[in-house]
Amino acid sequence: MHNMATNYIHTVGRRKTAIASVRMIAAAKSSLMVNGKTPKDYFKTDERAKIAEEAFATAKSAENYAVTAHVEGGGIAAQADAVRHAISRAIIKAEPNTRATLKSATFLKRDPRAKERKKPGLKKARKSPQWSKR
Image 1: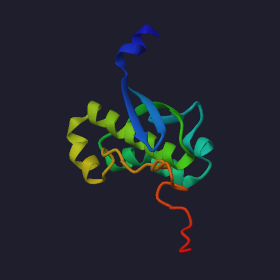
Image 2: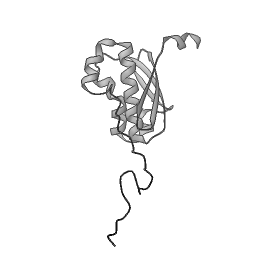
Image 3: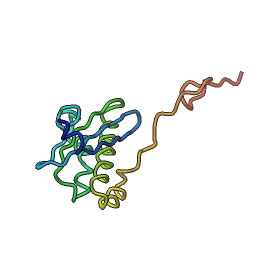
Image 4: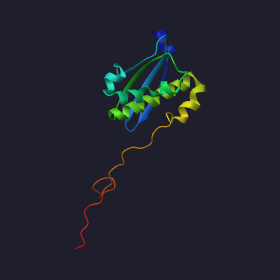
């Protein structure tokens, strides 16, 4: 066990309030586990599972890696994006020559869009209370 601990690459990916922590190890056969389940079982839909695995398909040279991801917070869609972000960062650490490919696919950029906070005196973030003329 101590042997494995020195060989892995650890990265973190984020989206909205979802945080994905990824460990990537060189292996004979590539695999991805998200919170102890396969991406299809965890994300329920094929679209979300594909988003999580998209980084491997884009960086063609990144082949045989065993990846385990621990995700928490946010919704299923944000978690899939967070996993993709973390895997992309891990691939770059392992193979720096894939950076240009992943960057052009915008997998390295943390999407800054998040829910805007509610302001005092307003109903929601930007919705003002009903205005009456008289």
